[in-house]
Image (cartoon, rainbow, N blue to C red; front, side, top):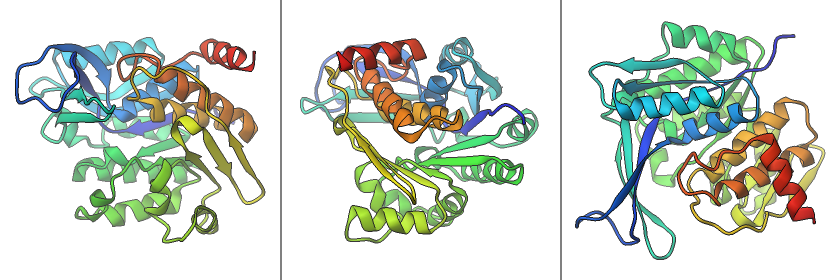
Length: 315
């Protein structure tokens, strides 16, 4: 049996953060960064940092922003052979400013950056053939070529006997983008592990209650559902059991990337054969520790750091 290797596909970018809280960028404001970022990049960095074989398919420019990401991912054990460096492209970026209520205002450059035209060919296609698990992030379905690459890799990995996890990370209005519902129906049909947050549970299952939505998803062929509840913790559901664990008590500094780290930890432990309660506990710890660090990828944790947080909370 070959060793499991996790693949994801999508945006790799830098995040540049305003140093003062407020609404938007209509006036000059102090900035700090660049921080390595992009939901799939944060996810796969956390997977790699936990010692699980991991890889990502994306595109960056041959610029400092691209190399910041490549260096971080390599350092944390991620296979970056599927990241194409475009000598004429520009690495994606996100400028973010926190509002007083903790919400965020973004200015994105993704669709027209290097990662706006990801394709599964050459080294990226060979990489997909070598992987045993595909993690799909809804936020990455932002351009036709990326959608096709995700669907192609999903089909390859399932054909080879692998598994698929899906974190929707979607707003309801995105579902009405051309071809989006069709793409999502293909992903859902192949999904083994579904990881929605809050109301995302109802995006794919017209139901009047949480229990009804969960039941409908499990009947559709999904093997397990993990419902993220933010600071309140998370719940696991399969056809035989339901497990809920509370969140960890920490001081929030920056929530960016917490859900990605949660998902990465759960997938890593799930693939390693951990029981659902153990996987859920480590996922909660990864999400909690992520919010205590400033910067989207800065809160990714090692196993030792998660063990320390779990021990601290128990005491």
